[in-house]
Image (cartoon, rainbow, N blue to C red; front, side, top):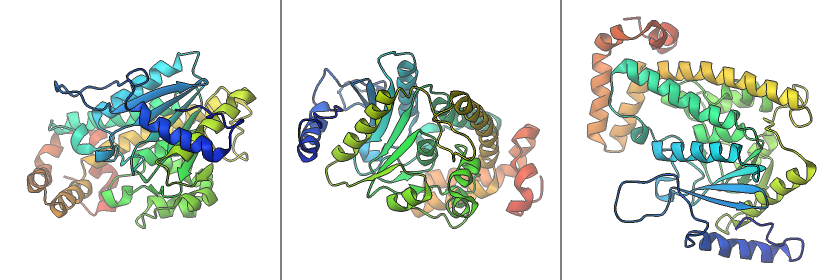
Length: 354
């Protein structure tokens, strides 16, 4: 699937056609198909994640197109397990992360990740989960290429922008609707976005405007390494990512290099500088994860989820958020001081501390 597809011996058009055919074969072959998640059903199903290796490049294909490759607990656990295995596998030099279907990833599927629990436990769970998701990308010791085959939302955007390179199909977009959801930026975007594309564009994406850049706009901003024409179920995108990965291997590039302006740090050419940026971003992720956990218990987020679920006709889940909102003056008294969102965002949200 992931070979350069003999590109040095055949025309690129033939290589893309062959790659398309092999993309279909991968889902039928028990040899290359592996999954790190099960659903407990007796009937077999397509794996949530497909993994394939070629020429020291490991491609991770998120394979849940019916749910837009949303990050459920299964999906997140599977990706982490694959990352952990690749980190210690000397035969793997570069990792590619890609989605199958019309979407790259719709972000974290909250309804599939969070279950009813006491507010304090919910706060701690959100903090640990969010921190772990981004730490698994930041701490991964080898280069990562995010190949966005379609629209990306939320955490799938912020993780992709912290990869060594982000390739985008022409139909791909970047949506970070944090302000609309009533939560602060995450995935180091509070710092990384402004650092890469300037504070004005960062505010447009992260603030109330909720600007959603196209692939070509992302390229102009410096977020995207390459825009790849689509229409072939991701074959051309996969070929471009594989080609880039092989070029890095030939150059001897072996370490993670979060893309930041050279004026800030040469993360590609200076291993120590790259390590320091990773450490800085992990500290930023820790603080952002704490703020996110606080915000999840705040009235603005609860109201937003209630209204969103009502708009989708999901009355029962909406009623749960309504109940949490109405009873917040009671259960918020039992939160640790660090968990009290009103203490941090009360002035912004227009609420008085309980």
